[in-house]
Image 1 (cartoon, rainbow, N blue to C red):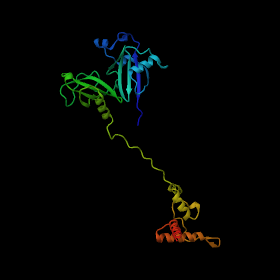
Image 2 (cartoon, helix red, strand yellow; image 1 turned 135 degrees about the vertical axis):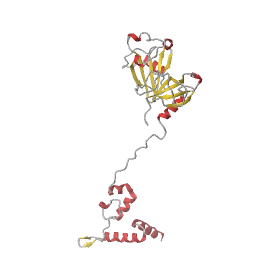
Image 3 (spheres, one colour; image 1 turned 180 degrees about the horizontal axis):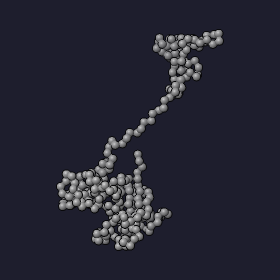
Image 4 (cartoon, rainbow, N blue to C red; image 1 turned 135 degrees about the horizontal axis):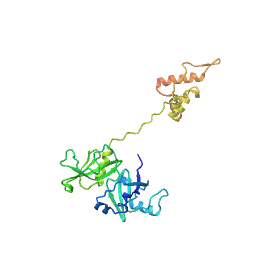
Length: 286
């Protein structure tokens, strides 16, 4: 699972003559003058991590009390913009004297292939009557989605949510980008069953002697009883010679014993250690 992303960025107006009319102006004043808050008029002064419970107010307070050493702008003031990214959901806040105003369309993808932008005013949706305009927008997981309003019926009709390509993502929207709509967008971005199963790591092939150690203490002990030498312990109890070996001038007594045990085991279907244990148990009963 990927770690949750909690990040914020602070934007302040560029030091240009054309920005003098909007610098330190309340958002309501800009609205009355039909001035849009556009990212191209700003420059990013700081970007950093934030806590999951951080809000624009807590970030502003932290900057006022303990500004970061790498921060090169002025104190957070009216007309600044704070952009918060909570797990891929991006929201832009225009800084007011007391509080913040959520603004749409500040951060955009800038894709040249996008059909929808925040300036779209006469868009026709397949299966819908009339034309639609972009009323609000939101960025989730790097994708921008637009809340579309009917140009004739306005608030009297349900809104819809489209992606940048004009694809219908959420229909019958009545309360903007509320939690239900956000959940539907996230479900669209991460459909169920789209995750790959974890890769299975195949064990490397084992040598016979390694298999013997993997078999456990009991099987190793049984093999030690059956095999001729310790160097024959390989996980297979099949190393008996075809006939007793001759060591010097004498025939190996152990070979004769093991061959006899193997012969009896083959006839009875019981291994030599098992036979010995049963015989010992029988003697104790007597």
